Length: 305
Image 1 (cartoon, one colour):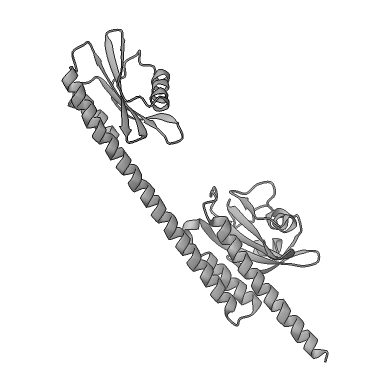
Image 2 (image 1 turned 90 degrees about the vertical axis):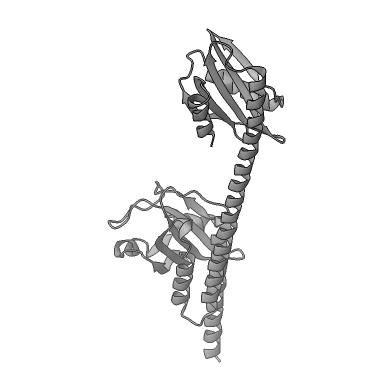
């Protein structure tokens, strides 16, 4: 919108230069749109300082600058208590805008400020809607993991089905690879997986505590996140490429039961709710593992009597 306004100011309004400096909610200022030939004397740093002053002092009147036969005016863009930046109009000589024309321009800018506020609200609503949609999908996937845990399958099958439900969230940038390790006396043992190649299965069949990211998550009892392959990774196998990782300890109270390993697309940034989601999956897996172990212990005890 502001790009079109700047272009119209030059093409239709006869100004030599027009630009829009945006003021971000946290105070950052940047040139977001411009049209025409910028006067050589126009100091961007000075303009940003003036925009900052407009916000700090809540100035709503225009600022006029004259130099070397050129005139530039900085018109603040306000709507309510929010400043959206300033529109700069420059021309050579005098007489381009009389008092009445300036009043008309400022009145139009009031509508522009309203338009910017409306666009921001629509953007915020769209973001909120998307966040809600993501949370609902995460809850649906977690419910799928719980359903898999309640079915009467072998432990390996339950873990594999739980991985499938977890990986169904494509927007979370998961790769089509995942694994569940169970904790033993000397380290982690791979129990279920999706998409791991033969070389990786051989390499990661057993992982010592503290080794690679899964071993680190087990040793620290904390979620380990990595956006790409780094020094702590084991070397990539022939059928693998750079990727990110979520390694989540599977805990039952203070007891380590295993580690959930989810592959991510390289460069992924941890989003809102993701850590809670993968922690929720690991909690369900902890219940499954604990239940199976309790059943086996009960069966073993029954055979002794």
